[in-house]
Image (tube, rainbow, N blue to C red):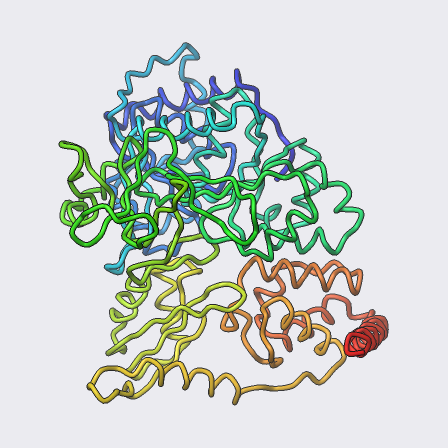
Length: 584
């Protein structure tokens, strides 16, 4: 992303012009799909929709076409905003598609006078789609008063901290709310980072320091990648040591090891743990972490209440596990155009007449000091790099494949979490994956799909899940192919270290091993450091195996064969010596 600045005067002018232009297409609370990457155009479009009285529907540009089409149609959007028709030109939406580039001159012709907005607190601000158990995502409808309450909490909680945080979250992930609206509300700068910046740890950190930011708001898995890079580079470590003052983590649990590494690098950093489902706007509880051995969910944010209840909807005793319910201003209106699901998840508050509680599905317990501790999940919902994935949704989509009879899905917990699926039928694994990619975001497509004639049964006649997992482990051990060249040996060792696998064969698929974009950046970063060659992250995604990655590097640098071989030999020798010394 080229460096470009926009003043508040310029921003307001562009927002007013676009708001006035789209007003001809929408009425109050009409949904407007925003199909744009994280960009200046996305920020202008979101603000323009809100000013015009509409409700924005952020659509992740990386979603498969069927999911995009479903979300736009399910939201009842009357308008979609995009640029150069990217990704939407082949979809029949039946609504007006506003191409910002094609209609730029018309938008600019709007009169630049103050735009008077008549938005009410009870109006819808946005509909955000999240994973659902039925096989399709569900749209969470959030009002202006809930969004404002949340941003006011961020402001009040950190009013003396002068937070300067980058805008790095995807538009489909509710963490972007604080990264966009908080600095706008305070008159601070909104600093946008491109997808490429975020996936290049060193470049990201250098830009973070260049823009004089001091706060990171991200999932622990991404922070783990950044810490890994900092630990390997003393010069970089010295630069960032005083630069990062606040770390806001959420979406998944942060490990004690990562916390320990964090405080060793940044002794004075404030680490805040944030918790909250999309259905309650964003963050519902927070805690300042003081000890790496215990990470509480903390206490509720502004105008929010949390209750731990048993099956009879009675309060649990201190220390007793129950289901977590959330009430207050942060509770959303419900699931858009889905009254039955809304009725099952948003229940009448038994302790406050006329109020509602959101049933989270999370198990928790109240501690003596009044803070909450997370225990686990009731259902089949998991988090993958901080993003919600409902295993029931994956199973439901699998069963819609014409050649799949039955399907069972498991979470595979390795360095991170990925998905393993078993099916019965006569389809090939890649054929099924190709089908799933049309409906599910990439992170929800199973890393490995094993097709069987029938599922094994236990003594009760039910599917023997333990036998299926044992079968997977046997298959993994049986397909190992050892490295043949020094370069393959080096790359294999890096993969094992990053993905936390005891054994990696040169033909094992990176994604089937549980690899993801964060792992990819770590692997390529290490390869660059060892060989001092500019190897793009995209090469790993394209090659997918150690064997193909090694070939790809050699094809990129056809005249460096001897150099690559000598560096590989020296690296392997140094690794062997270090290993032998460690045994002494």
